[in-house]
Figure 1 (spheres, rainbow, N blue to C red):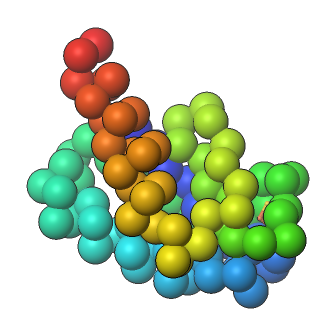
Figure 2: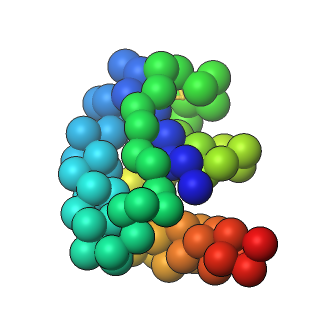
Length: 87
Ligand code: FES
């Protein structure tokens, strides 16, 4: 799985740096660091008035916030990992 966190200027001021730290920690704690590649990206072209744009494989998610990180992890990242485990 590839998780790309937008670090473009619009997303940066809405928490990209904090989200990178949170993803990094969660990946390390999950023990799935060999299965998940974390990367930054330039503007994905989906700037939102709230939160950061995060791309998980081919799916683009807008408005991801540090406050919403736990939900994003459990509702997007873990199910995607589970799907990839079945392949
Ligand atoms: S700056 Fe992040 S989508 Fe544009």
